[in-house]
Length: 138
Image (cartoon, rainbow, N blue to C red):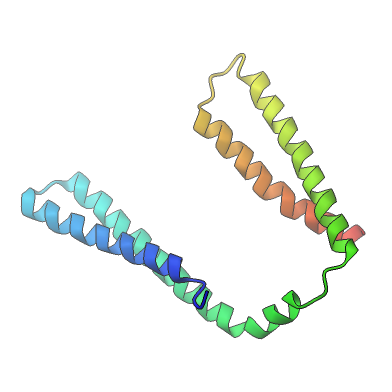
């Protein structure tokens, strides 16, 4: 893929276009302030995503040589061991969180989205931390 940030550019431009179209249609139909607020929010989020995409693309191009050097390192058995231990630790934490949520569901009503979101956040946090820990101590 020539441009790694193409999807982020397209998403931000789509958000900006959707917000602009919604603002135009809300002004044409009636002065619906609720629709204008959501359209303005889409415009702002799209603009922030566009700024983020541009800055990320500039930083990536500036650090390309360093990234290529890091990616060209040989993959050794130590990296396999670190990946395996971090995955094992993450799976054990996910099982604990899942059992905790199942236990709490007996007394508290938790929405499915909230439970799944907490599981996803726990996996996103524990895997990099475990990888960093095992990389430091192994």
